[in-house]
Length: 61
Image (cartoon, rainbow, N blue to C red; front, side):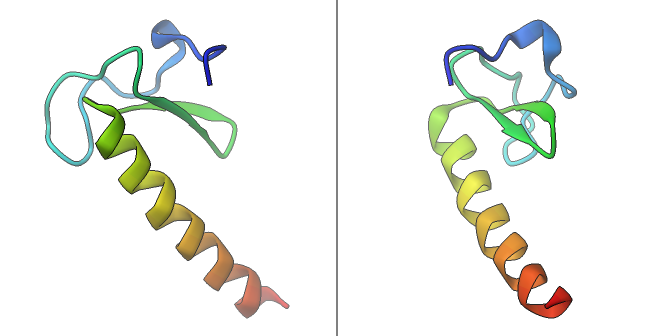
């Protein structure tokens, strides 16, 4: 996701660690850029939200 920019990030600290966000650990979630301190935290978030979103889709069906 090289097109995401740190200046567009909605948070300044990583939701997992509390550390400062890094430009190489950004993701897009529900139309917003969310930042993490490292790629591992970003990947953990993406995995968790994909499971949650899939579960919610089943409920809404």
